[in-house]
Image 1 (spheres, rainbow, N blue to C red):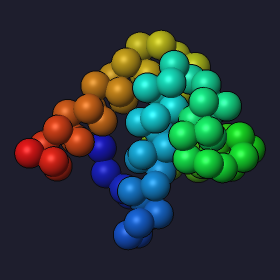
Image 2: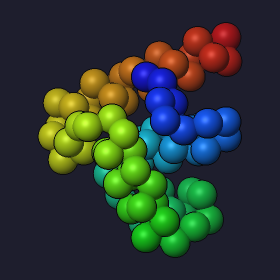
Image 3: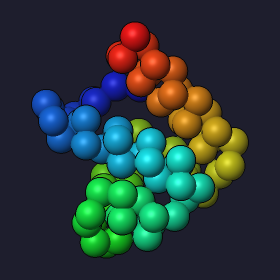
Length: 79
């Protein structure tokens, strides 16, 4: 998974948002609480991710695949 179309820390923020959204089983409120932001901000970030990556966050299979890829990405990054 790459930060296509997003430079620097913005891509990192979007990846972390997606990761914690999936960790929180799709809860906008729990994800917003984790980042100390409003739930509409999380919703906006997820819409940006959806537009860039072109996948359906409501599809459990795609959620699983993205979550697994992000876990792999972060394990390699912090190795």
